[in-house]
Length: 250
Image (cartoon, rainbow, N blue to C red; front, side, top):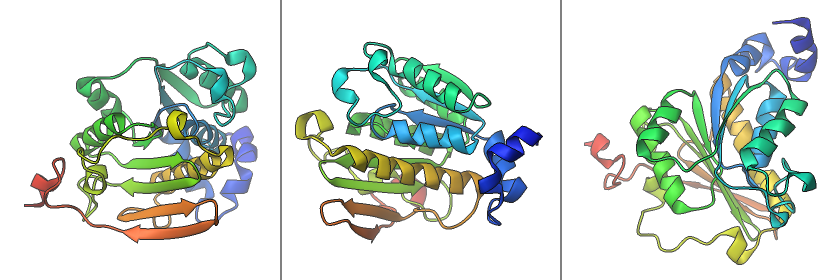
């Protein structure tokens, strides 16, 4: 590791749980961030700043004025630019050592499989069930860890999934495809700092998984009620009838 890297990441390296070995794992890692909105903004920024060496950014949307209240990786002069380009430029200025690949289109199942197969971890920062289910299926097929977050109104949640490892459930063990119509921020609203809180937890869980330190949120759903600032943890197990991973349990 070069002297400049030692200086840049010195506050992390000082932690005995991280040290040089953990920082090197981050530098060698590749993570894909699906969605560069309210959650993907702090996730991508913290992962780049913390030294994750390779980031793949996936989003087919463009920056709009209404995004700027919460999507902090974008700026006013980025309006109408593709989100992946805006995010790439911001992250490059934050940490030029992080290699960034961008994908600006909606991916089909085969393309998702290809992207997920070539990374170490996936972070789901999307805002709809269709995308979340598709990402979960790809991570299950490719046996790659998934960090999933969601935030709406004053409520947030985060969990981690390790397909094929131990008794880890998958995302569809928690939410079935017949759960009903998903609500989005554009329909119901969301308080801006909540996205930063949830996204920061996603980034932290991602780093823990990559460095293999601590205990991640596998099998647990972390819930935040920001109105009362009340955190709760709900434990859940694999669903033997899950349409994605259920057959792997028998």
